[in-house]
Structures are given as structure tokens and as C-alpha cells.
Length: 237
Image 1 (spheres, helix red, strand yellow):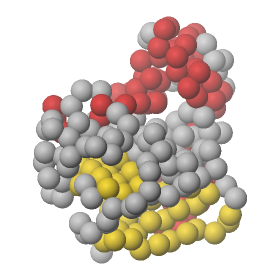
Image 2 (cartoon, rainbow, N blue to C red):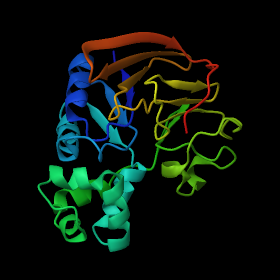
Image 3 (cartoon, helix red, strand yellow):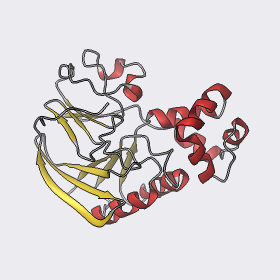
Image 4 (cartoon, rainbow, N blue to C red):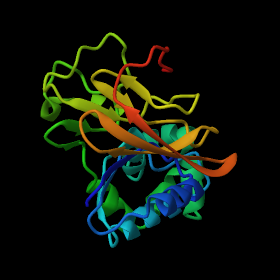
């Protein structure tokens, strides 16, 4: 039986990604959607990309572009963006390629990775869900979003998305490591690089899901069944 997983912001944490995939044990019938921000800040951005590329030989893989992938891609040809990116984790990413944290260093990222970045998805849409990096404008169709699809943070005042579908996203880091739920939105950026959890959300149906989580402080994999419903706590922006 096929399974569908969404994996939240990895931010270069290769060891956590390997542990999470070892726990899930994906096979050829499974589908994994990475919600973006695979890179920057953590110890091995290049290794994360390489592991995800190789994973496509094991199961179906879809990768969504996050704001950090967008910055990296633009930084290869724009010095001003590169300077900004370096301060937001690009230094660590370039180091994982063995390159200096400079515009000249960004220009030396191998063409293979530039092509890979160019082919990332802006979002993935299914019958019941929209998978994206940022929190989309609720009153705009998913194919008519601006850069909010990568950059917009959660807003507790948002109405449900105009499509009526549940949005599963990352980008708004939850400092306590917990999944954030609103009736129409689930956020699984659970602060992996900062000491929280790296989360894979197994989507079973519209209301039933299973969270797989690993963190740096424990060798255990936390697996918990959840029912999609609102949580009464403030969101971390």
C-alpha cells in the first residue's frame, strides 16, 4: 500500500534526514514531498541535496522550492542577493560545497545543482491538499500567488484557502518542535536546525495523519497519530 509523506524544513541537517528516512523506510510505491528549505544553516546542505536526489531511485520524490533555495539560485548570478543569502545560512551551504562565502564562491556551485534548483516545484496540489513552503494568500488561487508561496508567514487571521483544501506548509518555525494546526492549515517546520524536531507527516486521509519526528538530543524516533484539528496555542512567527 502506497504512503504519502511531507517532510518539513531540513536546513542542512543531513544526519537528521538520514535517521528520519531510515525510520520511514520508503519504497517504490511511496511518495515523499519535501516542503523546501532543505539547505542553509545546518552542517551539510550539499549532502542533503545529494541524499534527496538519490532517494528518487527508491520512491517518488517531489521537491518544493523554499525561500532559501530561491536565494541560493539567484545568488549564483546576483551579488546583492548573494550577500543577503550568505547572512541567512548561505555561508554554511557554500562551505558544504567546499566554496568560500562570496559571490565568486556562489558562481562556482556545480551546474548540476543549479539545474536541480531550477526544476523545483512552486507547490504540489492534490484532491484534498496543497503542499507548499510558505503560507499562501487565502483569497488567491494557488496558481495566482506571488512570492508568498515561499516567503509568507502564518497568519492566525487568515480564512481558509479559497480552494477549500488543507494547506500543508513549512517556513514558520515552531520553536517548541511541535506541529502547528489550524482547521485549514498544518505547518511542519518544527525547528530542526535549532534543536527542535525534523518532521515527516504521513498523510493518511483528510483528517488522520501520523507524525514521525527525530531530533539531535535523542536517538529515538517519535511516532504519533494525530487527528487534524485546531491547537489552542499561539503560533511562533
